[in-house]
Length: 30
Image (cartoon, rainbow, N blue to C red):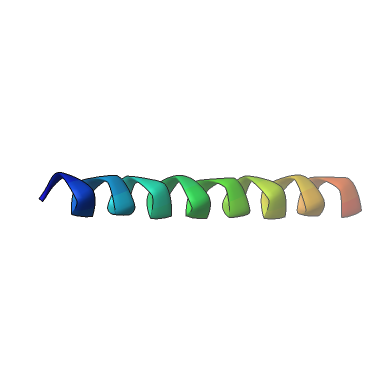
């Protein structure tokens, strides 16, 4: 149970990092 929660938290953090990187790339282009 706790392992699944840790995996879900890791995936959410990974998606957040990707979104942040895409956001900075768009800001740099425009």
